[in-house]
Amino acid sequence: MVETGLAAATGTWVIDPAHTSLAFSARHAMVAKVRGTFGEFDGTFTIDGENPANSTASLTIVAASIDTKVADRDAHLKSPDFLDVEAFP
Image 1 (spheres, one colour):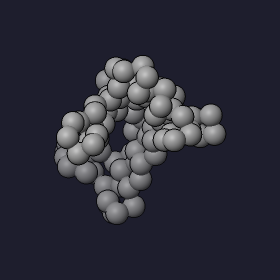
Image 2 (tube, one colour; image 1 turned 30 degrees about the horizontal axis):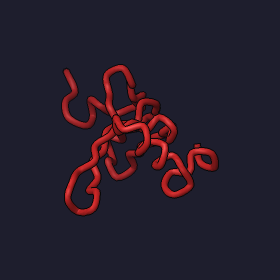
Image 3 (spheres, rainbow, N blue to C red; image 1 turned 135 degrees about the vertical axis):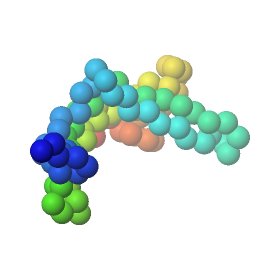
């Protein structure tokens, strides 16, 4: 018998960065959207098929890997004004 649904997915899974992207979109001055990505991250998620409320996820992002395709903006986002990558890598 082949399991389907959550029972088939029960277990711990590792996020594969080669097949995953971590992107965001934020409004700037309520007019334009700024889009970007984080290039370095890892994580896992655990699915409890018997009790889905017990499922968990963990994600670690390297804040300095932010990329909005604008070097000056990225530098500002990495500064203490925003992500403060020195204090919170």
